[in-house]
Length: 137
Image (cartoon, rainbow, N blue to C red; front, side):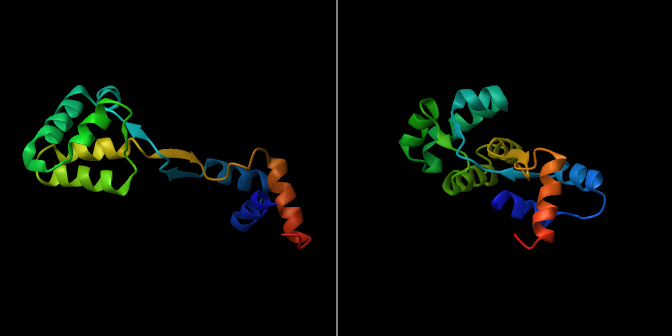
């Protein structure tokens, strides 16, 4: 029932086909756990970005704990963690890496998904409207 309620709550109204097409096209950005390693950064952003990040992480002036380098070489660190986001922003702001590199690495954790995952067919929207009209949702 939750999906029907969400669909009904956000129904733009009007013609069923037009409303369905409008809702089906809507997306949102989510930030799930996304583990990054130097290799993933090299593959998804650039080799230069991975090299710049590694140089910054290993630079004693940044004050980055040693475990960060180990994690980036091994299982990775979650780019969507607030501390990781802050670290990347700081490294960019202090010119250890470029702001563009920091932004590109942070963007890897953003995933665009359909806003209404339960909206699998026009019939689903039609049923949501029927349930709303009947006062069930």
